[in-house]
Length: 213
Image (cartoon, rainbow, N blue to C red; front, side, top):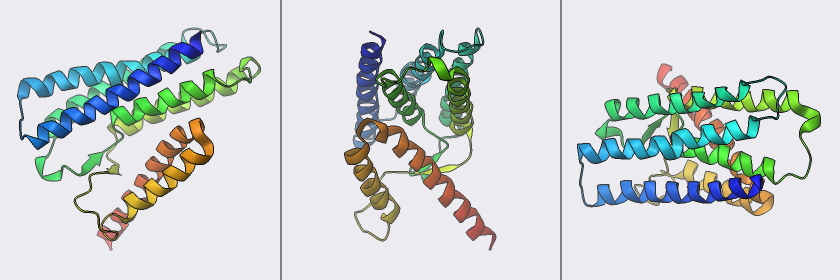
């Protein structure tokens, strides 16, 4: 039953991401920028991409760890997501639309949603590895909280043109992601997101070294 609930949650999360993308896409297309709409968008993002990952982790930890009430740490994701959304609204720079600072809330939600599908559809019971399970889950929670508000520049998927030279990173990433999806199926999603984060951190550090030299 729990597996079915997580499956439904993943489907609705996917729809939320699609509609969130379309909302921004059409707003830019028809050049409409409304302050009320921006605040309403942040409120819906807070529910879809702030509360949802916290609830997912809460349910994944509930009654499955040896430490009581530890599952409430999952709501740190909601707090840091709210902080990120507020910070994004204040510091949004129209001159740097292709620059993404930190991990976006939709990507973070997609990560935890895919993790829930893997765990709940995994036939191997977790009862014999509760401590390891707890450590891994809390590590993911704390890491996601850090990445949500970090100043690490994540590369964007906004194609200004389709030239190989200017979009080499994007094309390579999409090719590797496609290969992972075809070979690993469900497990591919969190792997792709981890790969995206690692790639972004690598190029972020490379850029800083290049600026210094």
